[in-house]
Image (cartoon, rainbow, N blue to C red; front, side, top):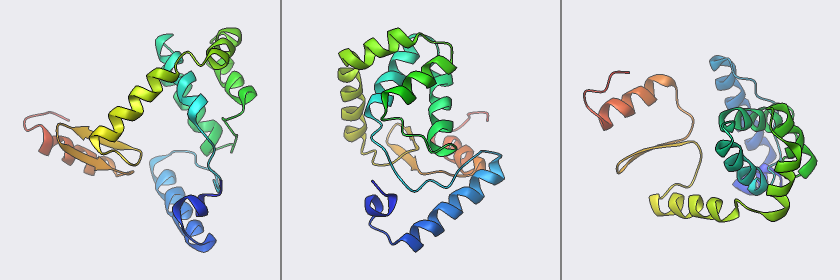
Length: 155
């Protein structure tokens, strides 16, 4: 679905939003393409949880981040997911079984239920006890959030 439809914005408004994100990403040294479409990430979430059980969660999530936000790949497609799995050194065959059996579907459902119970409506969201910081923020703001949430923490 086009991001403009998802957010209920005009194409011009979306262009400005994407430009702002690109500027922030550039300042942080992060690659970010010109994303205009959102894909169903459900299977990617299931494969991501499986990858975590295999000790490759962080690598898989970073590969998925790059695939979508940099290369504009549709990770709702099984072949894209299998390529990502292989790129981080996991078994294509085992990942295909996870996808076909939907063996991590219940775990993703539990994660979504937890997110809803915490009032999380967007990503990224940092949560500490009853406090939340939603959206992409500069490091200093995240550090301030953590210090306010947990006095005495050394960051």
